[in-house]
Length: 376
Ligand code: PEP
Ligand code: MN
Image 1 (cartoon, protein in one colour):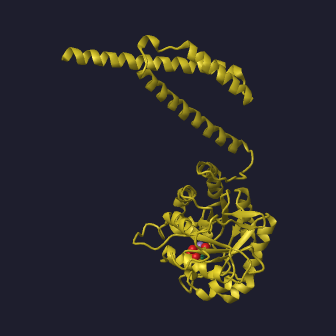
Image 2 (cartoon, rainbow, N blue to C red; image 1 turned 135 degrees about the vertical axis):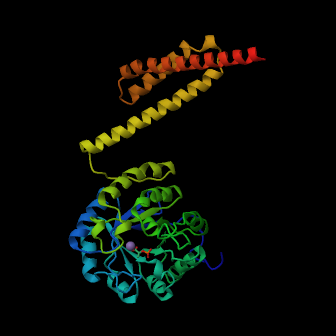
Image 3 (cartoon, rainbow, N blue to C red; image 1 turned 90 degrees about the vertical axis):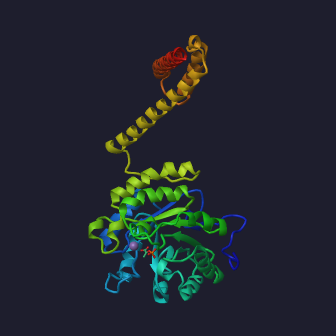
């Protein structure tokens, strides 16, 4: 793509570091907070949630570019102080949207990251001004912008002197009315193939409805996103803007607890701080482990049955192999500080059920073959 002189792919990917938080590194960066800052209490409550979830960055709009002139336009400077204060209390970074030159001037020194929203993606004068700032800029993809237009918008910021741009896909306008916008997940891969800049996903503005946020967030990580920016509110039903797409604090925490495993599956890291070791959370963890144990046992049984197909009926039981497996597992258990006694008691049963199921399958097969032969 021509003209991506600075935003175009470089030898290495670019990681943006802000006060010890790296966006575009191994770690998935979670950002959360309300669509709009409403009060000091709202911000301190939600900052606590974001922190507990393992989030690193608190979001909150104080200058809101609303589709209708009659919608809430944001608390301005008063809101900014609530955002900054709440982030400070929880040792989080903060991000807010700028919509024009005056708002940029007002917030540039006070927040850690600036956001340029979808509606301003092609506000070229604003992009040039953002290029003069020495702070990272989250650049949202415009409602109907192509990936090329989005990257050229990033190029404006880079060309004006600011290399710290984080691309944010937030859904594009399509013919589909079931969701507010359509999350373009392939944009993550495409943007990363064309540019070295980090890419994050905003599932909230894409979906416009909270029931889809969790699955879209996981899909975004699987698709290679470097982070997520998600709307959450202490009481979404009362939110002055974007309540229907805002997660409750409980939902936000739940989602964060589920992100680690997805991150690991694509060789990334996400650590949820979690609700701590309460009885409830410990039991949830046990339930998850139990589920894995049963699923793995079922998988083991299926393999055992396949092995059975390759054995003769009188060779189904193999004491030498059982002994060898047992020795290895006792050793493994000791290394894992698990009682070898437990393994010695459980495994004979597992072997026994395996043998039984192999024998049963073989006998059924024999019977069927017999019946088949006598028909012929
Ligand atoms: C926002 O993040 O609150 C916002 C207005 O987002 P977008 O620009 O993506 O619509
Ligand atoms: Mn919003």
